[in-house]
Length: 368
Image (tube, rainbow, N blue to C red; front, side, top):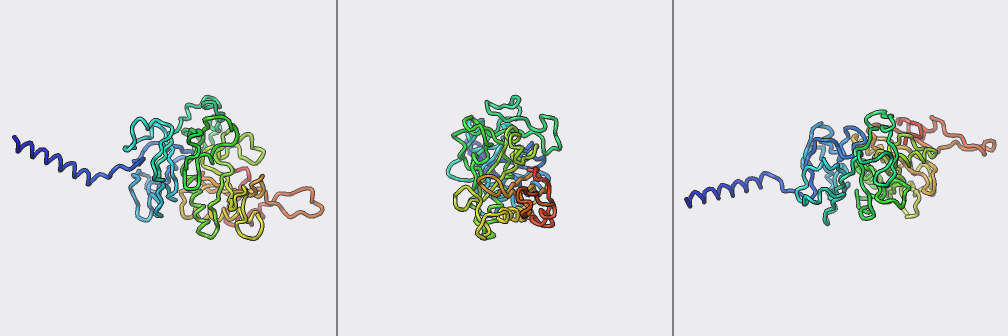
């Protein structure tokens, strides 16, 4: 009997040892592959974490999986996720939780879960469902109505967001990527209303980080990239239509941001090309970086608009990950003669093409 108990104990110990060798150890806030809908899929079939292997295979891969030549995570040694390796947050629906084995079960229902000292993907935001929105409001915060709610579903790319990230005074300073915090993407207005709600997709963060990296690699200090406008509630978008915003702007879907690069901390676009003045040529350098990033990562293709004159910040660029290529300009004018000094005429399509390059599609300025 003693021999039998000894043999049984040895067998159990052996099985546990084999399991430990075969199965990977759980990591803090580590996700397994999920076959359901993505967390904030404003663009259909665009996975939020933009894993190249997943996008190209059409199947599901675990976060530890790699594909030769197409790594799921950046090989740069950064601890974040995405193609840049610099995205430090995940946005999930409650039903999308599959495995966060190192977190107590009680924490999984909270609005956000933050990890320890490791700056990797350890802030997980559980979103509020779109179904919790009552008419134009969610929990006292005015959102307005998305195009689908008004019967204007142009394509799957314009369907209602899955849910909203809840922003509070306690979590607004959370880093969502290397250079950006959650507060950077909050819609303008309703300053004294809390909580606020944001739609934000991880591919946008990934693309912005890659553009910064590309500019730095090409000798342009882009560490001071700032968000002029991130998420925009439909209600806010309607209010700024006169400033060039599109009726169905991508800002409403969490995959667009207007950015400028402030190298000196004065809240304005800087002289990126070193010619002694801030002009349209400086903001075009952002477009050049976007072109290079999209050539390397077609998963992040989207729209880029250049705006020459707008408010205190000066020139800026619109960048999005809508899933199709689009280019446009606004605020480029012909030189004025004495006869036409009182009236500015918009640039012709030919002059816009000259600014953007002959290979670019120029669309209406309202495409943002």
